[in-house]
Amino acid sequence: MITATNNVQMQGVYVNVPAVDWSLFRELIRKFGWQAETREQLLDRFVSSRPANPAISEEEIMDEVRAVRYGK
Image (cartoon, rainbow, N blue to C red; front, side):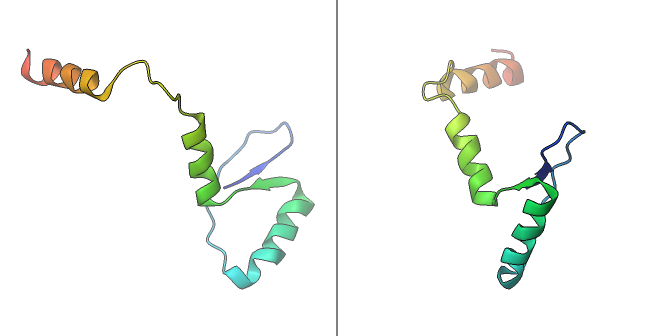
């Protein structure tokens, strides 16, 4: 994902770049002052932002779904 780093509205995009062109593309990203991260880095950042102990368990979630779906 690439985003601009100045104070303008941001737009996230996904771009598939051939591995042989990655260094050239990374240089372009640097010159424009954008930020880039791989899909793996994006996923790692998301996973690390999740709480270690969620406020509600998976079983509690399923109980809520059943209650709404089946009126129980």
